[in-house]
Image (cartoon, rainbow, N blue to C red; front, side, top):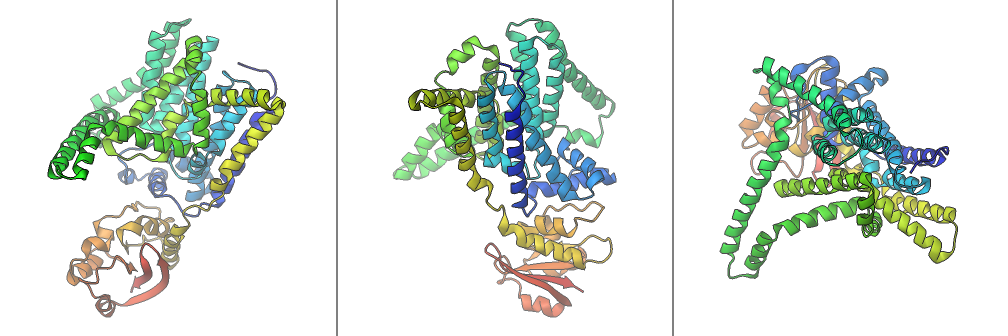
Amino acid sequence: MTSNSKPYYLYLVVLLGLAIRLLAWTNTQVVNPDGTLYIFQAKAIYYGHKEALFCGYSFIANYPVMIAGVFGIVQDWIFAARLVSLLFGTAALIPLYLLLRRFFDIQISALCTLIFGMLPVFVGLSVDMVREPVCWFFLILGLFCYLKASEDNISYQMLFSSLSFLMAAWARIEVFLFIALSFLYLLFVKQENRIRKLIYFAGPLIFFLSGIGLYIYINRDSALMAHLRFKEFVDRLVFFYVQYKSLRDALKSEAFLHRHQMVGLFITAARNNAWLVDLGVLLNRVLETLLYLFAFVLAVGLPGIWKHIKRNIQARYLVVLSLGSMVLLFVQIFSTWWIEYRHTYLLIIPSFIIIGYGIERILLYSIKRFKIGRIAVFSILSLIIVLSTLPKNLQPRDTDKIIFKEIGETIAKHKSGDDAAYISTPVAIHQWVSFYANLSYQRDFCPLPVKVNCWEFNSDSYDQFIRHLLENRIKYLVWTEKQWPVDKIDFSQVQHHLNLKELGRWNHPMTGEIILLEIL
């Protein structure tokens, strides 16, 4: 469904999405843990420190590359990283609206896009330093170009679709699922100029894989070989089987140990129905990401979906992607029993067509039932979407972490010259403290907590602790009340042995009292 009318609704939705993201930005005071690593990688790219590229991650996504590029303009690492997320997180609304316009009228497309623009999970990620916003934009753009090429018979659009999917997969490797399913769908579903479209779609993939293959052949011993992620997708499937078998064996042993107790019967039932628990975890994440309210809208759109996919090849394509994504997330949960809300994008984005059908049914029912005009219903639904998401979108984010930022910034003010700040902290807070303390440092200084910079790894005895400080040139010590091993090391003895200068005191529920000390 297309229209030549000016997209005023799109302008309003994008402006509203941008406004709510800017508010979320002002409510975000601390860099998320992943962000510290992406900024570190961006610094390594910008300053040309190849040896430091793989701190925390064994790969380089396009997100830190973009941060490095934006930093060259704004000269602020945190601002650059947030700006990349904000721009792509907001820009994703445009191809989503255009994609939905191929199925629905302006108002339904605008309402669906508004839901995506206002969902707190997507709003928060659009100002966090994560790879998802870049992935959403290119993924949705790829879907739009694919459908445009398919429906309008514009073969060269498949080239743009393939390139967009590759950019999305560079950000998040699981998007290769969409590439594979799109290729198979193009291969087996009849349509005009199918061979030409296949060539356009497969061309960038063949070029990319040939280039990688040639590089591997020429540089068989290159250190970069370890950082190529092609095996990862297959390894995850193998890991799924190994983990599933291991889980069943462990539950069988536990059930036998408690065979005469109620807990034994429960474990046996859990072992035989582990797939239901998996589905429950996935359902929980999707429901909470959609705030339950919009999951209801999706549910309303499900009853008529069969009718739509029978007569609409494009709708069928998106439903196939939704089902494939659900299977992939199912496997992911079975492999690790861990999934974050941000991972649900893989299922939710292609499922927006079902949400669209749900909104269409609700809108038509409301017009018929309450005898009111379409614009009135549209306005009411828009208001419901905004008001139902506003409370979460306006909440301050990670305010309890501000203390760790302050500690790092205090160190940054006191450290001399352009040297790195060598800090010893507990594991739980090291990433934030080290990141902020060394934000302006231009050399490689990975913020990850490791044995050389966390006294928890070196506190079995007083001698070991002192040796840890001296051997690693520790200049700043962060003492925390709850983590300090009082049974092994008398802190007053440390204070007596070393020449310490107190730089500040804080208090946090996780750590108790915190004292920042400079070792003179």
